[in-house]
Length: 596
Ligand SMILES: Cc1cc2nc3c(=O)[nH]c(=O)nc-3n(C[C@H](O)[C@H](O)[C@H](O)COP(=O)(O)OP(=O)(O)OC[C@H]3O[C@@H](n4cnc5c(N)ncnc54)[C@H](O)[C@@H]3O)c2cc1C
Image (cartoon, rainbow, N blue to C red; front, side, top):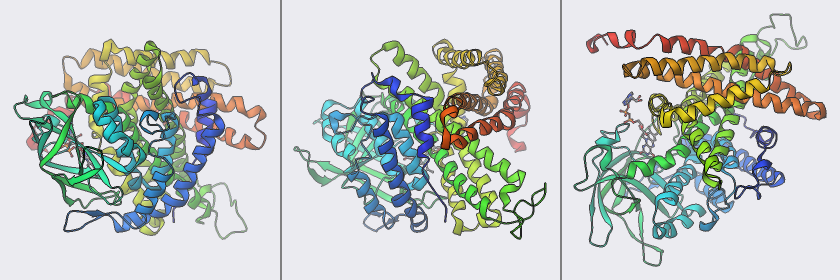
């Protein structure tokens, strides 16, 4: 059985010592998040994740969701009870606006709660995750009436939410979308069409499901400029807000798939379903993109979460499994063989994952903090800078954390040898579950294009320059002996990132294929620099803690060693990414299509 212990200490170290949450007491909701409250909340989230969600992970994988002939869907054994506990604990609305019943606590902290739940049971955590996404879109773009009708129930968790974008012939290219909306005299719309791959589209966890649907209003322009966003609940509401008749939206089937079996992935049929417009006509994609940053951050967290739980299981196994002797002489002479943790290759594997996880957690926390600033600060300039950060780092987090998250689950599986391939240890489930995060919420190739094609040049490169200046400024200010082993390599890699950015400016405008061919390398180069910067911030905080750390000293010393491993063994990959980018698109594009 896999082992999982939520990394509460690491989370608290990030919030208190690396990012100093206490310095943001002026932001709404932050004053309520005092260190002891945060510790208590994270402790409860850990308990719920470890004791309730972890045991259901395997059950969910084995049983999957089942669709009955009447179109209803049953979730795996135990999911309903766990969902009730989630709702009773108030977890869904933890960061939602107090105006609609939420607790208004910083999303910076909620990101960590989400990580714990996703590590414990990613398929389950998607149900509240999607609700939070749908809630965010309604909160920003919905009319006061829609907000009043839907938000309190969604924030309480009595109703869940979905996002309906994908159709059989259109995924990435939403401009091809065919679902139709026809305006009715009462101001509502009749929606007709088929959506596929809809996560949590139908289930038995909540009394209503609030679908957010992209559709084209009759007569609207072709392409992305004619798409609108609607809310269409599974069960229509009466005037007093109570549940009324069934709407004409139903689950046609559920997909057989590679992983996340506990989450129902549905074909949704809209047969003249009643819906209401969210925001303005033909501005549906704009409304959708408002919540995309948060949703993509959430998917990045899924990548990290699977990497973390796979790492913990692999580290525990490496200390138990006896095979061979250490190259430098037997270390456990009383045993018939040494545990495999003595072997450099196993340690390289474990450290690669550990060095990623701890920096990735910091990157998510830092970016979630920028999200809080962007939404809650009353200082316009501060809001804009934070929003720039979110826009720039979101594709990096989504793409890099899920690519590495998946690769790390495979590496952790390798630590188990053949036992990793056998279902009993649960390692193959982490591999299967992690894989989807690279695909949905915009496939990772699209994240890379978003970064290179849209985010780099946006507002004259303002966000990119702010990031470069921040990292360069940090390196300059931390050139002392203690920090040199860390900021030195970071400076080299920042140079690679700047050269790559310059190369795109000089070579991609006239030849866009150069940008397309180098985009994924650029995203990973950017990710490595961002993770390297996080390691420097972590080291700085750990060094400050060490003199008075007493019993916790090994924890902080481990940070310094892990950071050195990252700088020496992982960050140098930026040179390879730069070389690939500078090779341009010529060899990639030369072969005719028939040659493939
Ligand atoms: C389990 C699961 C759950 C999902 N949940 C939801 C959900 O809740 N709601 C929802 O609406 N959708 C959902 N999806 C759909 C998911 O978001 C899409 O599958 C995804 O966006 C990719 O779209 P596609 O499958 O049509 O691939 P395509 O768009 O056909 O892309 C195929 C490949 O081509 C690449 N590609 C496409 N266009 C370009 C381009 N212009 N340049 C370079 N490369 C390109 C892509 O990166 C991808 O690798 C889910 C999918 C799955 C499998």
